Length: 85
Image (cartoon, rainbow, N blue to C red; front, side, top):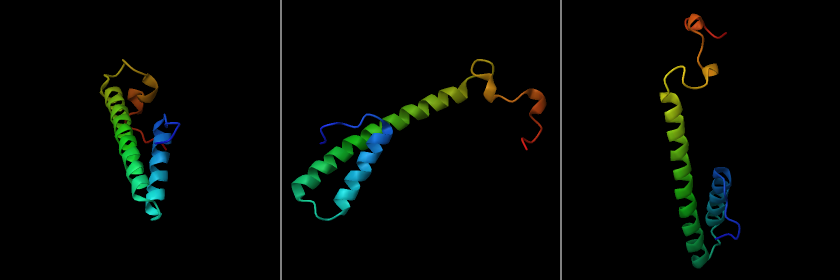
């Protein structure tokens, strides 16, 4: 694995892409390919967990009854029937 582990989702995804590129190059020795595969598997699992957490946060925000959250995203009742353009 790398010395500095990626911290953010974007960093993890970029590292996965780099691993895939290296493996697809076709010149990686078996031992290195195995190490890269293991690293990619861990990063993919981490990314999946981060995406699941983000989805849960979005679901919770969408489930809030009107008036309990940020009202800026809720259109005024008199504008519900009008097109935004």
